[in-house]
Length: 442
Image 1 (spheres, rainbow, N blue to C red):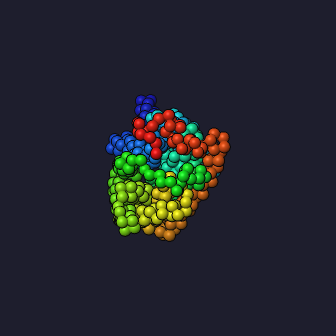
Image 2: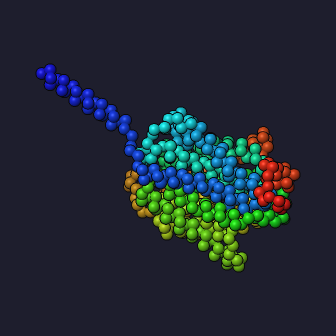
Image 3: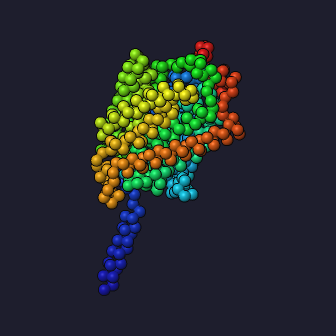
């Protein structure tokens, strides 16, 4: 009897320990998914120097380094901020009524040292991937006020903007307890950042452009790009990096990844071809800058939709957004506001069009899943209402908070360059350098 009791006790202990181990076991690392996510992280970071080249080539030669520094500085500022608090604010549990997230384990990433996520990807990799979105978003804004902002003020502005605009929007849209993530049957659709990145950046850029006013001499003085070759190379790097931006947002390496990658490619191509076709009919010439602008218009429009549309829908989105972006730039000239490098005209407008119009190209399988979650019925028009509401919320929030931040940073630290600083150029005034050696600034 005693030996039987010992056997039973031993088995019970073993089962109890085994159950405890099983309960605490983490998912195994999926090496394929992890490798793709590391690659995607690098591709998204590549977009930042690509953006620096794109923007840098479009400004006057006396501002080329200062403009490129806006992108590169974001790589430093936002990376430190992301590790310190922003990852927690974006993906922690909702606090203050869901305004942002918070998880003390995420501060300085201390609590994720050995964490493997459900998809088999280390949380470090997911965090670093998401952090690249936080870098490029404020860098996009800089295009709206290029050639007329103090560098120190810019650093302060993107710091507080990241904390108070980007982080809450990211939490609302992508955190599992975010209210936009849970709006409607299956949430507001923003696969890779149409709302979080492009609408927030474009709208904030427009607010900044209107607040700062026009550059010295605009629009009467021509302000020609200093290096369209560099701009074209930047556009090419952005196109390549966008595969990580969109396809990486599947956080996997499978069918969804392939679908998003394909949608990205065809939307960019459709956007580029649509732009030069319109340009050729409207102006009689097809320009390199137009081709690059079409690439970006298509890429921006498909960003929120890459995971839910088929190739024909992605092409349609790229073409539709490009037409609207093209005529928005014409309207900008007529209205007279100085969005220097068309941050709003392409990123803001393209993001809005993509986030709303995607509704009419959603896969049937996605709608079927949404209907099941809704209890049997979920229509395109219901999802359309969710998309419009999410876009409206992002616009209103971005406008209000960005305007408050601009006023405060300008009053306390100084943000807009004065006439003399602007005349001398950002490179010499704020960096003591010149981008092109002995060339005189234009």
